[in-house]
Each structure stands twice: as structure tokens, then as C-alpha cells.
Image 1 (tube, one colour):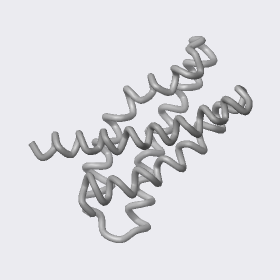
Image 2 (cartoon, one colour):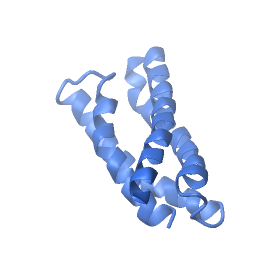
Image 3 (cartoon, rainbow, N blue to C red):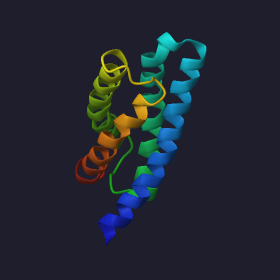
Image 4 (cartoon, rainbow, N blue to C red):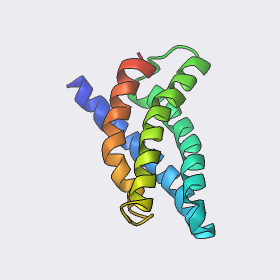
Length: 125
């Protein structure tokens, strides 16, 4: 039961992360559609810091000691799935002609469960 509650809380935090990263992403699309990857990268860095803060204080209740090591682990954890989702984003837009507005949402179907598992069993252990 505790794992289910954590996953629900992780999902709530994830909604804010997604809102932040997509806001940055769509802002870059608004400026210039060719900047979609730049918006994706910058949105990633901002949203991971948000994820670290809320996951540490709300989801996993300060399970990680210190500040820098858990923060670095957060960037490493999300970095792995970011590389995966960046490749998926690029492939969807360039090769499969998926809309630039829809493609990042499809990537979330893969990255959310992976991020939860890595954060639960490694970052905040």
C-alpha cells in the first residue's frame, strides 16, 4: 500500500514537473519551431530541480541525506530517461511525422514509470 501511495504522490509531483517542462518547451516552440530540442533540454533542467525538491520532501520524505548527492542522483536518474525520451522525441518528429506538440506527451508514457522506479530504489534510498 505504501508503494501505491508513493506512486500517486510521485504522479502529483510529476504533473508539476510536466507542466514546467512543457511550458518551457512550448515557449521555445512559440519563439521558433526549430528550437524544439533547445526547449526540451532547458525544460528538463528546470523540471528536474523541481522534481528533486518535491520528491525529497513530499514523496520520499527526506529519504536521502544531504543536498548535493541526492540532487546529482536526481539529475542522473532523470538524465537517463531524458536521453531515452530525447531520442524518442527526435524520432517521432523527424521520422514518424508526429506533431511537435504531441510527441513529448507520448514520451511520458515511457519515462514516468521508469523515473519512479529509479528514484524510489536509487535516488532516495
